[in-house]
Length: 258
Ligand SMILES: [Zn+2]
Image 1 (tube, rainbow, N blue to C red):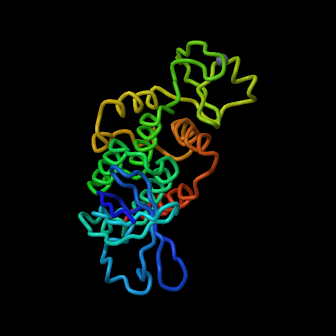
Image 2: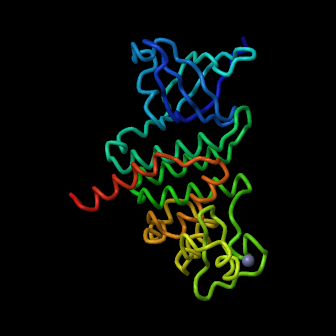
């Protein structure tokens, strides 16, 4: 058994039998990894606050040859993001980030840029960034870091240049289309406006905490959601559940602004 350690974020925990937990981590150099934290369910003391979602930890684990589940030896909390998650919308946004990161990160593939991205978005959320802006920014950069960002300057079907004077149609899988291909595809899921394109330009150049003015473009059901979430869900061939929780939580917060 080889013993290894790395900086990591806790993406999720799942019960394993009576006493143990399976912990999914996004590690800076080891990529996504899953391990068993023995007795962590029965006694949380051994791992302290390190099991809360999105806690940044120093993780040590033993690799088991040919086994998918490693053995978690220790998790030392380095930074907690749990107090901001007493806010349901922030908690739901963290769940979306965890779902995306868990689906796109690869095992044993170092991804220091994806690791830094997650840390920067968590910092911005803690600083009060709107949860949907945080999610859209994370989608944008996750797609870009994986070489999956949809091109909005040319049609995803025929390659024709898109000028977008009257808005650029987007279909459900995150393709931007020309008018002819949109008709052939049988309709659009959204239309990228000037504000949406502005979001994409600014996200390319700015940190997440500087994106606060892009709330409207980031809203659920908007064209950016069709483009960015659509591309992620099409690539991973799944639909992420956590978005629905975030929709509910932000609707409730809008009704009750206290
Ligand atoms: Zn076309």
